[in-house]
Length: 327
Image (spheres, rainbow, N blue to C red):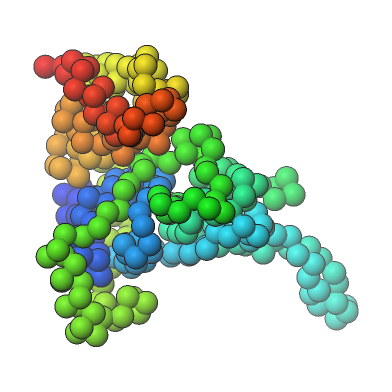
């Protein structure tokens, strides 16, 4: 265990510099992934193909010295392809004869960072297979619970512009994600920097060649998590979070507001954001900073509002502007 919390923060913050060796821009997305790790949350990344979502996760795992696995979700993917399955195995017995036994073969979910690529391309049965893993951090097989490694983070991706042949995630699954982060296009300068790197011979599929150093590990993450738990949230700020959540439930633009789970996730996200900023307590500024990525996937717009071109971020921004901020 790392005793110096300051060292833990510097190590965790150093991860962003290491990831930048592979990915240009996307600092906000990297900060969101780090915040999720600090409070044992999961992240849904939404962006068009080619915006370095997969590379981002691989670079993060390298900088944190964590194991990672990628699963390409497809319409024919089965739950056992993700979780694992019980298989028949023949092992030599005490007499030398082969004895037939059953053993559990672990699936790719048994890792630290699981990249669920295009999660909305697989049917609900396989999507639901991740529910227990994300919430309980275990997989139940034949009545036996198999614990997942710690830390454990699911980073799922989905394409926002291609809906043919997809299966939208149900609300129960969306609610398991701490953040829904939007991975946008780079600026012109950032895109030119990407081209310069490729022109110099960068191979995004060869992670070791990118020179990413492991600047933090499980010990630093454990110390950071303990420090985040110690970040104080005074009663007025807690009341502010409750007021925001209740306002979504009363909004005429929404058919579904934020659940109590969403309120607690907003609290934890704000605590992580405050710690990353070096603050010992949460202010309304941290709540506002993480409100959109924490809440945008927990609300549902009314159909007539969608037809007017309004999105969840627009409604939530209006609620943030209307709810009084504690002084």
